[in-house]
Image: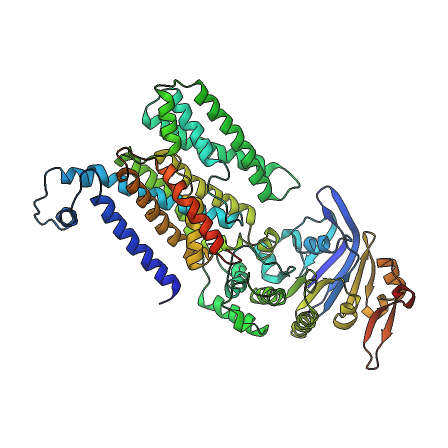
Length: 258
Length: 335
């Protein structure tokens, strides 16, 4: 679905990272891990075509991304930003309806079909009771779900999620990531960044470790997330523990807890 | 009946009542019966014996002025609604990018050069457009900055520069002939609007309104962070340029005939948003109705409360300040 070849990324006048190679398949969850300031958001913005790449190439469904219009990209790729409150009190329903814009003509307002698609996306995320509420007044977790619903209403085949759990409480983190898995099971390709190695271990099919301005490792989470790689990435000592039922989690080293 | 429908019906009723009042009230009072008779005989052609002078007062004196208040009020409110959505800020007015200051400099220059009224209006209109074009050109050619922030900061800086030009011309102007005219223009007035002005401002306001109506859905997406709107398929640069052009055209046309009347573009969109929410397609028509009603009420007060005419710019600020503070205190989180 989404492919990067020897990609370099950064801001105008400054290259943040380079040499990123990966291919995201339909139904796959790829988790991007890396330290603060490591360029995760910059890489995601480049992959969305919001920043021009500094080298290499990006392909969306085998077509070069830089030849696609914003509307073309939006019909395939949905962007789920970190939940923000917004300025104006749009209803949750209107917020989700905005996801339909790429499917409307320039001067159109949402049609009955658009409203239906939005309602369906709202149902899928289980937030129908919130549809009439103001987006500014619901909780952070609810906002994140509404933003995912918006990407679904967009009929996106690829979801790019920038730290979708960063400001959520534990229950909402589990809920949001559960939805991510469900969407992947329906064939949607998901690229998400996270601060939690556990999220990659427990929810992702592959992990991409990003540090020192390059891709340090790409592979199955249990293979690339090791005490060594995490020490390298974050500069702390941790251990990876297998639970009785075969899941993995990441715990701080004993010495570090003293 | 939903809250939105109620708001629309209320605004329409208020507008109709204010229009009747505006025709009736003044130095030469016209009774409601005579008013109905006058319009009835014009529209339906039946005979009605109107008191002497009433026809002149209704159709020549008050007619253009009432219509001008409606058009200017609606245009300023529409431009303000578009700007507040686009700049994601409920405290923004349509002169953020310098349209009023540019128009003022143009008009003041026209007065300083002792030109006729028509030339002064053309100067004001051109000054407004030129100021915004300059701000847009500088603001969007600054690299490596958030485009909205660049526009706002450039607008402030250029506005200050134009303001110093106005101050210089006021200082140099003849204190007996020109300075009163400059002050009068800077405070705004609808007293001198004639039918030709009215036709021109209506046409230009309609030309600005059309893109806003057509783009009413996409306007909503400008309220999102830029990245998000672009990821949803909107070319934000082009959309923003279209909205700035439309709002500038409307404001410059309004300011050219009425002078600077502040507060409407700031206050009215805000009040309308509290009534029907931020969805632009529902918000814009209500803001225009309320803007028209507000300026008509203000202008009617201006020519009736005191023996001399009070400038509407003074009254909008006097009424606007407490209203705005009340809105601010009463509104919940989220505008």
